[in-house]
Length: 574
Image (cartoon, rainbow, N blue to C red; front, side, top):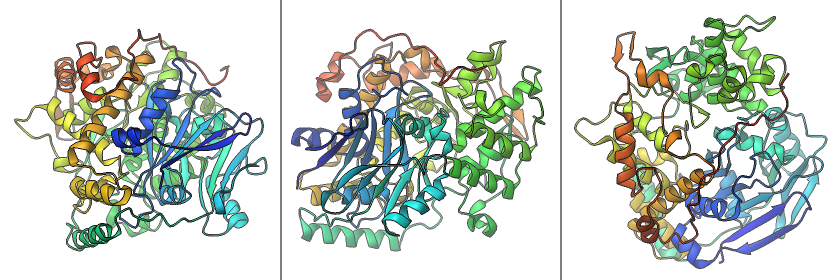
């Protein structure tokens, strides 16, 4: 069966499907590399992220809905409203399986609807844009409930909340209780006036080699049965070193949310949310963090950027650089955090400013506030202090995604373990990045990989059996290399070059000594960045060399002079 793209132009309502060329499938395999190839190849340079010309891609992996475990995740890929560069955000639940079951690996969205709409994918290839005026303004849970009432309980929905509608720069896309959150993918969806995508059909996608496929499924079941149940879980924060007060201090966590029943009953929250809405604003009240998480998810907000924006506001208040009438700003005020979440989503009062993200707030206020802006490439940083975890810090700095955290994880040692002593940091980061992108060709779940029941070797065999394209492990790594080069070329084209590959000044000039945690400033960063460039086959400016592009077969990449990147606001701020 041919692998297909569904193209939807929201401006004129045109809808068409097309086959993905066999050579493109071979070179980019699926998932993230395939989406990166289409975004780079089809988005013109200099397009404003919130303009109709921006492209939003939903990508389901080639194994989604196949019956294999850990491969039903999906990606939202676009030009970020926060960084102006490449972003991919990962969503969970089973929306990816249903999108692929409807017959499409890539949903390619362009244009802007005149009025709110939702996209309906129904039985027998039915594809329609339907009015969504009555859904506009609804939270993500009410939206999903209403769309399931209309289309059946089994329908799968991915939607935005009020934050995306109001163009908060870090709005998320929600499916069930899972989010594709980082980088503002929900903001782009809101700018296109697309409230939701509904998939109301299941298609049995047969494996190309059914006999081999059955054997591989059995092998995975055996791995699951004997997996290490102590493998890192996304909800566990016990033993983690959590930055606090906008990275002014650090806290050694002694809480394991996985074993707190009252948090489990509320569906989490995960590590990064516990940090962003708790420790970073200076408190950890589990029930209040859970409530803040639920509010963010229903309003359609990225919890990490939301918490980072609030902590930034608290530090500005601490230093006398920000005042807000009627708000008790400051550390250890979880009730204020809850109120600010609502204000951000609806752009009320101080929320109008914070909705623009930390970097734009600093640009707008000026007065030296950029010193306290904890962002990488304009994207709010996750809960890893680069001085304590240099591997994570370097990984985020040199990634196209900036302050997203899936680049810097120490896969070999768990989520929070120290860097391997005696190993070259640049080499470790390069290998980790390739592993992550290779996994996202599937699209494989990081925790299935860490748990030992989705090794890349097995995923490679599964891709061969299911798609009918003979693949080796080196093909996945080559596709990953192509994706990393394309993502870098995309950012270079948008003006995000060597000067963007850095950390906030706080980490470069200040050490940290708090709560028994001590580390000096990250002074080695410039030399490590250069070492990473060399390892990737890039020049001293971080540009993939002609030899590297030739080796990867990336004839479509043209490294013209990067344009100047200018900070833009979603709307005029008073």
